[in-house]
Image (cartoon, rainbow, N blue to C red; front, side, top):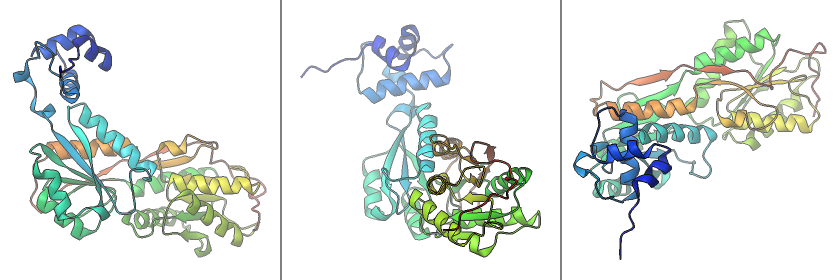
Length: 356
């Protein structure tokens, strides 16, 4: 069969670049060409599998010669059911790697991988540049992975002595949320927590408790709801529990949620009960994903933009050599607050809450 050849014009159209620039790069010229454009063009040419006449293959950079980074999801998460957070992290990973001509490859979920299946990914691959683990996994799993792949970066969980990690600054996020709500006049709070089996759940509740303690405030035990999952249905369930015990005069006026997914479920439930947001109840969340913006009311949230977490994980993976046990880095990224429609000043009527 005759191999179909792609033209330099087609590559230029695909990438939104000039044909002159594509021609220069594919003929081996680097002078006057940015590194990002050089890598992008070679990556696309390599990815299509075609070799147009005149392509200077000896000039092809190593980083586009089949190199890839793998990623693994924690148990309980699948590609089609993963949280918005992991989706944003993957986007950041992909963008950073694609700029350097490196592919991102899904290796599987923690509960579907073992030493044998992991080894299969490396059997015929000499260009794997490392693995990013998304979410908290069992330490024995990570130890088994490290025997096969020494370059590992964990996202949202830390494993001292085993691998690098990138996490958001939960303490800073909590302080930003609490200060924002205090400025609006709120002094009574509720916690809608999820994923209680994970480090991140404990760290967020601890950070929230510490931020409140700075102002001599606490969350009453009956308004601390912690559930095993963190989906919309869990946010709805947590909201229902809080309303069932909330007093009209003394109920919490500001609800803080583990993530945007739970916050969205809680907000929908409140609206169905005829409770206005933020007039009656303000909602804030540890989240900076699209779920905070895609529906009304938009959600106030504080966290590290997850795309930045993905980019940082990729940068660490590519730039650092396999480390000894004593030289891993735990990178904590700055959190930012985005104020949106779901938070407002305390009602003069003290935000009357309907009892269930």
